[in-house]
Image 1 (cartoon, rainbow, N blue to C red):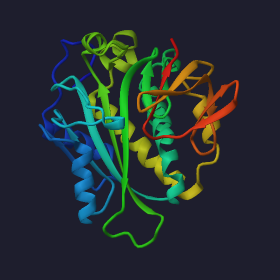
Image 2: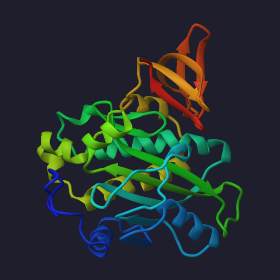
Image 3: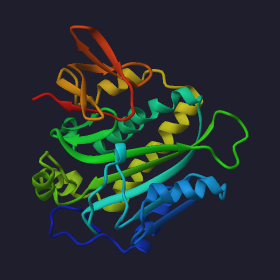
Image 4: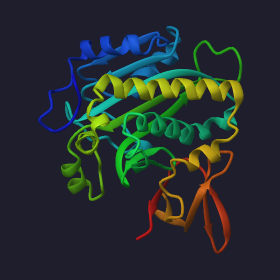
Length: 288
């Protein structure tokens, strides 16, 4: 495959061929699979992790998910060839209180990795909306779901199994924008603007994200999370924007987004001061 330039591009490689292309690109991964169809790659890896079978990290991708999930239980719309959908399982050694910080950390790592697939003049257009959505020109390009569980073989309290799933739009941005009534981006649209992006094939996009996750989690386990707010500022799509914070359908806060704190919480400044917003069932949207 030589790129994902337009909707007339060749289809994704066959599942076995895509898995074969990923293995040399991700030598640290103990298991790499790509399926024609499954319910949910995150759910598959969570079930396997709870059984305590095998050494990690693992990667499992699919051409089609029938029960794909996003944050807060949202469904992920997909069709064969229009999305890259994959999950990775990692062993992470961090105190439980730091686990919520992984959402912005992984979003940051993903954004920086995919920026490297773009020409330098386009990279600033790819940003991250807290806690971990990836946006191109403020339109959603990819969503990330992070889940944690205890390993069946865990020996210490700080040992957690982290499952990271990504859905990256390759095609269908125009149709999705209309059906969802919000701006959606896809890689084919980016590739039409950027010659370097046009050369990135499916295996390259998956491998760059998975490798970035592996490195970010290893560094967090070894060195902690120092410097996260400063690094986040380099990709922050919300900085200086008026935002609404919604919890269970109710407006909880409104104000100006001003980065994150050391715990990865979004900071929203308003007349009551600076409010730290935690990852959870809360969603953030630009004020209208």
